[in-house]
Amino acid sequence: MADEGARGITRRQLAGGALALGGALTFATLPADPAAAAAGSRGGRPTLRYGSARHAGLLSAPLRQLVTDAEAFLAPSPKHPWYAGAVLLAGRGGTVALHRPIGMAVRYQAYDETTDTGVEFPADQQIPMAEDTVFDLASVSKLFTSILAVQQIERGALGLEAAVASYLPDFGRAGKQDVTIRQLLTHTSGFRAWIPLYDAPTYEEKIRLVYDETPVAPPGTAYLYSDLNLISLQLVLEKVTGRTLDILLHDEITGPLGMRHTRYNPPASWKPRIAATEDARGPWSGLDRGLVWGEVHDENAHSLGGVAGHAGVFSHAWDLAVLGRTLLNGGVYGRERILTPESVGLMFTDFNTAFPGDEHGLGFELYQHWYMGALATPRTAGHTGFTGTSLVLDPTTDAFLVVLGNSVHPVRGWRSGSAPRVAAANQLARAVPVRPARGRTAWFSGMAGSSTATLTLPALDTSSGRARLRCALWWDTEPRADVLVLEAGPEDGTAWQPVPFTTARRGGDPERHPSGTATGWSGRVWHELTADLPAAPGLALRWRYTTDRLYVGRGAYVDALRVETPDGVLFDEARPADAARVEATGWTRSTD
Image (cartoon, rainbow, N blue to C red; front, side, top):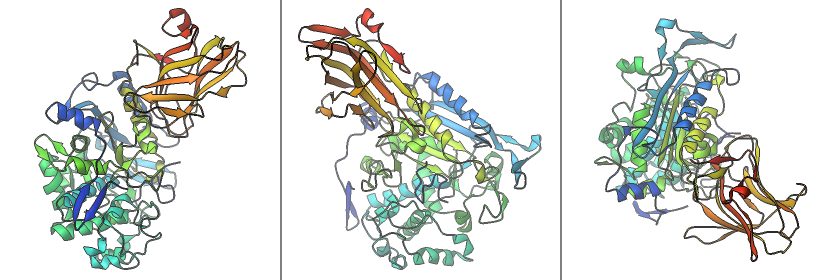
């Protein structure tokens, strides 16, 4: 089922790197993964264990706030709860610093559409969330199918740029003869979001509907998120391996990694530990099934026997964290390797550069603030699921986040958007400390949405015309939407004008900012900033950080502010008297 975050038939809310030649994959050189490099320098790859926030290199207060924020969505958000319950797991490196269940795994036995209320089970029949509650992952299942495909690419059984029809001749009908394996993995095949396969009476007829489907856009010309891509990839995998997808999942991923609670079609004995989903009835559901609990929620996956490339995998938070740790480790967990580091690099590398805003690696979505929040970077990878699930992996900070909620319980119409995922991601991002460039503190803009924060220096005499600002600057904002501006104006604070500046990171080339602004991704490292200041007998200078109402990045930090001329220093934040004259609105002193 296409995710609730659809914008049209993409999934955003409110190439290259490889060539496939004759089935063999040639990898281009990829940027070093900081997390993998660090792990390698220690002579091994971390496996998961519980530990404190401090042991994980995280701040404890944001992790506590992560839980508080998540619990708020158990209440009306704004009219109904976003989920009946959830399991939250967050960590960094090999340490799981947070694993917390909230709310209920099973609360409602039905949905009353006449009153728009849930009919609750008797209290003694309701089941609270537990750390090991199992969830229907919905579209997070696509990640498993993608990993299985990349494994076959490694082994030469699939060519990344090979035509799907070269493996499934019937797929080439209706204008799909040139669709490639890569286009299935990156949702650029031209397929529409989904079709009701469950209306076809037999398995063969359902597959025929896929083969007969005509793309709504020429292959490679648009990003259109579609379940049909991963259903088609399932058919390819089963053809080239001679094994069904559920067997492949066990043999190639969950078995080697010890993910004993991850599978298709969980047995009946698991039901008391599974989070219930929807009271599935028309008109909101394509099938009349009543309360779905212990079976796949997605109608097409259900009609395919519970085993489908786009949905159907059940798992719990720890197992998903193991998968995430494996990928952050470069494809290995303990002694077991399921992918090469090069393959993981491709899964975390954007193949959709022609479609800005819809960045996508092989199977993984990249840089999506609409659910990754402030964790989003150009290499942050993840996926969401319609039932309320998500996995986010940030190689830059070696952090991972699992949010598993039963947000279609009792009915899908009770929630929209992705606010709990964003809130959790923002707090985990805030939990990764940013150490001051110099000394013990730095100015921090905060991460509030719909806000403006200003950091103003006292009026200075720059009439010599040779005054220069120097400072350290760190920024990571939602690109274009949230902007940091250096401004100068008269002493009375009117008529502010942007001041061009130049930044340079250690070992990097200088970058000019002629508009006096910084926005987007800067590598999450400190930059040295210089700016020539206008000449004025009383010049006010300030940083202004403005955010929109939707999403935020990690924010901005400023440190070691200094204004100097060839004749001397006009302002130096290191001097207590000068520091006391800085006016901060929204900015705070941070030690992180």
